[in-house]
Length: 139
Image 1: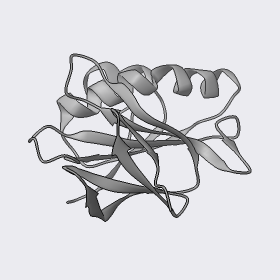
Image 2: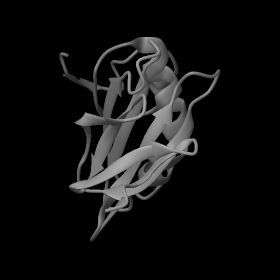
Image 3: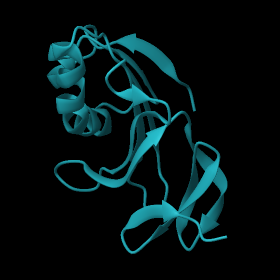
């Protein structure tokens, strides 16, 4: 999977309003849904004078052929001692919805699965999909 670093000013469609740095695996319709979900967080950061960086990874976490998104926003007001605002997003509907909300220094897909869903790591802690959302794995 190739990752590109693109200024949102150069991105197409609804992204023209979001002057931030974006890292993503390219698929424009899924990307647009994810960015629409993140728009308020980005606007909040911009209103405080920040130029937020958005890290967006599109990946099929459950093997259904529809991509989900791992998103993290870096800016002074989106980050604290435990990390930055981060989400796992379901992109299967007409709009994105969160299936995991975090403060994360790192957010990545793990090679393991719980049921049909890939596990994810948040700050090195395994998160599993259960009851419609990602939750901390019981030890």
